[in-house]
Length: 613
Image (cartoon, rainbow, N blue to C red; front, top):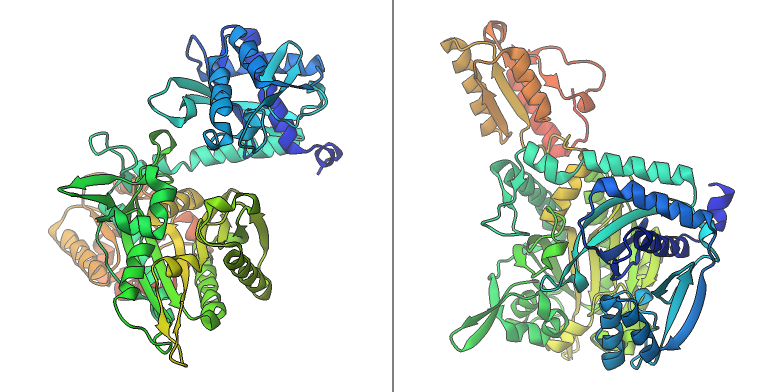
């Protein structure tokens, strides 16, 4: 790392660049009206209302104006004024979005505006707002709490990357602003490395590859966030489910099925209704209200409660591959990574307190095994409550102290690479979130283990202890992939479509040299044998040349390709072509077709990352 990189705190630098960008936009477009401009991962953005639509060709012009402001080395100066004065000031500046924010703050405090980044509101976390802070650089002044650099001249290396639409305050009923994104790092080397990563991410975009490889599609008539999976995409998800089933079985999970909707009273009892009311799809049914199921845990609690349980019965473990529905904001939807219909590999273990450690240990091993199969490295985030916002969580302090201490002790005992982060807990309990790093260095939150003492209390769950008393079980929530949709999107990009054989939507492609009956019959027989063995295969008997057929299989990223001609028919042997990334040294020598089938079966069963040839 460079000396400059060591000295610069990236958060205030990126925050300062958001202001510098806004000042540059106003210099170029004096009628610009500003929304908010927070720091985000690797950079910043600003939402701006402009008279004309920007396009990518406009970004260099804005960058040039930013460099001019940086060269001027303008000081960042902070001032604090009464909120009424600030409202009057921004009215004079013709900044209606800033005025709207401050009017809400004045009327409701931070409770109304808690969904917005408080850095952009010029206030701290308080109920009654009487003053706000402003930051100015040159002739540009913005509502903000900071912190910022001492001057614009201290800004590091940056690049504006894209412009997109964003509804004001995330509501599609509000005006659509233009969101300008930028990335920023301390030095040129770090910026260049990140831009290379962005280029690689564009090449691997799962939306493009998903269409190219015929895995999934999105359809306007069906609706946003509701992907349709082709037979190939469905085969991939089934393979992922089978992997989870093979982990579930030895650890004692039993599969259950619960309905796609339920009475809203169930979620009121669990606490989900109050917490996630805006995310539920609610349906009026005669004199009742039903909700499309957004999560499984309250349903599994009812299955547990249906019988009197003895301490000998525990742990009771339920697993379910259930499609859930959540009313995500339309603007946040994207490909498979954010959807409204999501399929979880959800599981819940109802355990005695003395079983918590052993059960979490089993789940950690399951997650480690899954990550290994996918070729993903990971670290753990110990997600804890925010002590200053206990009203947002179920249960009392003592319960949370106990749960957090227990998870922390286990993280240390299992020698995890973990970081404790406040404010990331589920509303019912702390959790271990597993953050996986993909092939190009991006981090994704995937698997999770959540420790819950509160829902068993709310649902009055119990078991009969050895002394005959009634005791509360502890509920452990567990997801390995998280949702299959999101995981599949991540894996498409992680592998760049070059899936390992066990996961590939098409594992073997057979193609004929010509259309003679003898060759076609032999190729069809091979395909039948492969299908009978559970291997996903397609047959190409088209009139195209062999070289064109091979190119087609290559573009489809098929692991193994077999060309069938007179020689193969006569000898009963095949010489499989192996996809380049799977090839160890050279193309394998011809072998009996039955031997080839056995090798592929073995490779799939072992979840091998490389070809066994």
